[in-house]
Length: 334
Image (cartoon, rainbow, N blue to C red):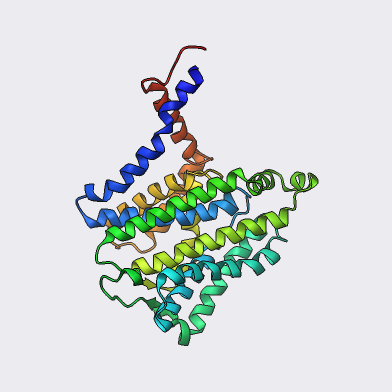
């Protein structure tokens, strides 16, 4: 009975957090703060998608910007050239990123360790150069812009940041639920086994190549969708910002800082990373180009030295301690 009592307070925590997130935009005094939370939600999507492949399966990818940029460019080109609603291109962009992942999975998963990581870096760089080369289609280094149509919900455009906030929140919650479902599925167990020891997993009969390809397809699809929404939210996309190595590192660090191989790790990482980035930009106001990369590096070194598994383990310890102090958290023995 004591055990059951201890679990009761924690049951309502997710619902309470969700209720708070639904009203938090109305509590903020400035739309800029809503923008920060929207960016946090976007990176929850991107970091959660990266975490499926690199966190659970242990396949370190530093080229996920390739899938992000593919979704963003495919969607923006379709919107600008054919006037297709972004609500439709949202899925088409994700599908394009998934299609890109098919040959990548067939070729790159023959590599292991640092060779796989290097291959993913090359993928992002190759796509960046292709976008720069075919400037007749992609507008080259100038990038693409989304024409502003005013308050047009069918075109995923709003005159307020509030609708963007709720869409981004829904996407972030969706990725977390997908990760939770995947973690408890057979695929999730396979990926964890592969991440811990691929040779041992294969000795037990696990088809590691197939499992990693499935994880890559899911990760690429979600990353592509994140890229589409980012392009629609910012109204502009550039080759360097879409396919650049710095962006891939930022996506990876969201999960690494928060805690790889966990459901809520990307959430914590996105909050910490975005607060650091915004604080740096506000304090230095763009006076030192590239400073954010130094912030990334310093933050990464700090986390690795202080919390090698990310900050999730620490937050989990705090959370369990808080639950233990709530009324009714302890009961007598049955």
